[in-house]
Structure formats: structure tokens, C-alpha cells
Length: 369
Image (cartoon, rainbow, N blue to C red; front, side):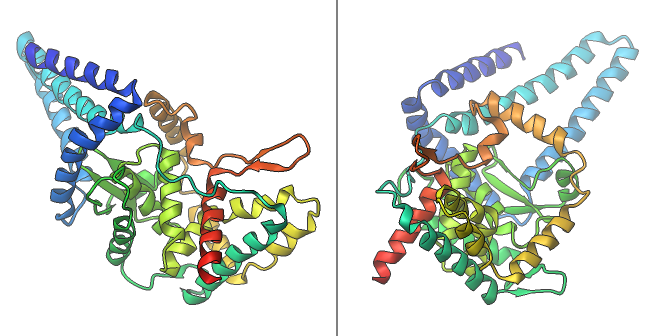
């Protein structure tokens, strides 16, 4: 057992060393990590239930049994038997830590995501047209979807179809930065427990499997699934996963996917209007948003009310976890950056989300022209 533990420690140290060098992390990710993650992802995607959830359940139950067995041996004065079982638990935990550092820890430290967004000239005189363009498309998506009397979107197809639709969008990514296989996101039966601590999705790299909460509303769900799937194709950092989810959903021809992108991020493109001299422009653009969308906002607010009663605790754990793996901003990594402005208040660099929106706008403008 001691030999196995020493091997695990040496492997963990090697992973940590690789994480210090983005070039090394990129090489290891594209060669060794990708082969493993794609392999287990293919196997687990063929199964109809969450392997992640099942595995965690087995690990917890097994650990309790081993500990209980060990304490029984301790009461019988079998000290070595107790130590043996404790060491077994330590080896299992260390094995998981090693594999997670190998499959996820290294990817957290790889090179930058190859999706930069718009980097051309920023013309303030076009801000209103750009924001209006996306608000009008938001309304168009809403009009193509159906809502129930409470304001919730009625899914135009099953959740399984939604997962496959998102996988197809990820399949369009041609850059070799991304993994070859797009894993299948799975619902978890313990969604209520996850919701309590503020978790709406998770990706477990050791099993190459994205998971999502069934408690998420239909407006939020596509973006959440896309975020977890983004982790599965190599975008482990939370800000990268957010950008990739926005890029994939907002570029889709599926109105539900675009609606979800807008629901989660539309405020970021409308906020460019804050930098105009005429503050009435923002009010004018906001007033164009369809009433169905505002009713959907109200429904979602009421839906989550009181459900995430342990969210502060969950956020602290997640913040610690992200900082441990090198994301200095912790849970703030989920949020967009702020535009950079010169002393006169003129925007000289857009936020990360705004760059994606501007890129889509100019691409569509050129193609339509």
C-alpha cells in the first residue's frame, strides 16, 4: 500500500509541475488527456444514466462501510485491521485526486481559448443598431417559441433532443484546441440537493461526463448544458466555458438555443449603451423587449425563490475550488469582464461577451449585405 501511495504522490507532483507551464499543459492535454477523456466519454455517453452521480454514491457508501468496518475492528483491538481500511480509503481518495488533477487540473492551465471575438474598430455610433439587432432577434426567438400561462417556455422537443442539438453545435467547432468527441450531458436525479447549494450543472472530467440539474427552467437549460459540454470539449476554465457556451448558442439557428444565450447574457450587449451620451437610448432599446420575455423573467425569479437556501455555502466551496486550480477570480470567473474606457469615457476595448456579440453582428451584417 505504501508503494502505491508513493506512486500516487509522485504522479500528483508531476501533474502540478505540468500545470505551471501553459505550453506543457497544452501538449499533455492534446495528447494524453484528450485520449483518456474522449475514451471514457464515448463509453459513458452510451449509457442512459449519470455515471458521475452513481459513482459518487458508490464511493460514499463504500467509504462509510469501510470506516464502520474499521471501527468494529478497532473495538476488537485489531489496530492493524483498522489502519489497513483507513489506508484503503486514503488510497481511493488519492487515486481520485490524481485522476482529477490529470484530467481537469492540467486543462485549467492550458493556453487561451481560440475564440477571441470582435477586435476591430469600435464605433459608438453603431452601438444602438447592434443592441437593437439582438433585442429584435430575442423577440423573434420568443415569438417562435411557445409559453405556458405562467410564462415558462414549452420545450419544442425533449430534453434528450436538446442535448443532441447542443452536441451538434459543438461538432461544428473545427479548431484542434477542442476534443474530438463531444460528450453527452445527462440529468441527475439528485437535482434538488444540487439546487440547494446553488449548483445547476457539473462536469466530472475523470468520467468525461457533463451533468445538468432538472430543476433548471427551459430558458436557462440550453445555456447551462452548453456550459458543461464546453468543459467536456476542453474549456475547463469557467470564463472560457461561459464564452464558448455563448458562442455556440448565439450562433445557432435553433431559436431555443439563441433565446437561452440572450436570457443569460443580453444585458451585456445592452450595457454598451451606458457609454453613450444620451442615456435615453438604453431605455428606448429596453422598451422593445417583448412582454413574453418579461413574463418569462418573472416566472424564473419565482421558480428559484427559496430553492437555493445553501447557495452561500456552495459558492464559498466553489470559490475555494476554483482558486485552488488557478482561477484567481474564483466564482467571479462566471461573470463577464467590463469594457475598458479612456479618460473621456470612450470605449477602447469591449468586454469578453460583447466581443462575441459584435463578431456575430458584423458577420451577419456582411453576409446579409
